[in-house]
Each structure stands twice: as C-alpha cells, then as structure tokens.
Image (cartoon, rainbow, N blue to C red; front, side):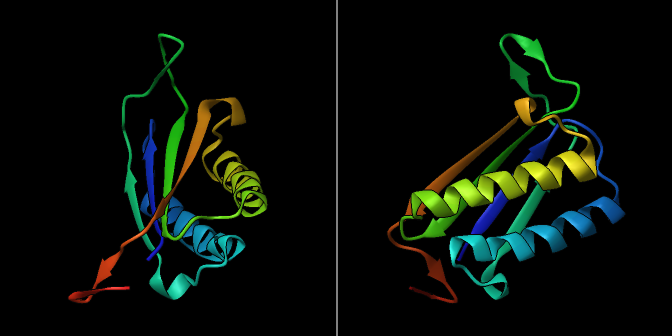
Length: 113
C-alpha cells in the first residue's frame, strides 16, 4: 500500500534500479510500512526544470501511503531518500524534491484496506 514514484532526469541502469529498489524497500520501514506491500515505479530520462532551468541531474520522488505519515517519520525518510539518490545517482540534494501523500482509501486485490 505504499507507492514510491521516482522521476529521474538521467538514465538509470538495470543495476541502479535494483539497488534503488532494495534501498527504498529498506527505507520504507521509516514510515512504519512493510516492504512486502511496497510498489515502486521509475521513470528515467524525465525532463525536470527548477527555477526556469533544466536540471542535468535531478529527481522528483512521490511517496503515497495509506494513512497520514507522522512528521518525524517523513523527516527521517527524506534524509534517507536524499542519501540514496545522492549516493546511487549523484543527484545533489538541492535538485531533489520529495512529496508525501496520505491516502484515506487504498484499493488492492479487489477491495479496500
């Protein structure tokens, strides 16, 4: 029921996708959510602009989850996601936006949680 959607300016190799998937799967526990329900999507070669200028290296990461996340949990997750994207894709923290959406109703397997 958590979903992480990452839009990334550069090319992401299959090996990098696997590493990102693994590390984000571990990080989701910071939001008190299990990796077993985590869905992740990657879209690379995505055009992103900040301040009217196209970013060479940048990303937008959206995290949607059932229920409202606690502020201290999103703070910890933001720090971890920033670390992961900087380490794995060389994306500067200033070129990374992360948003969080708490969802009231989440459907899966033909019904809602």
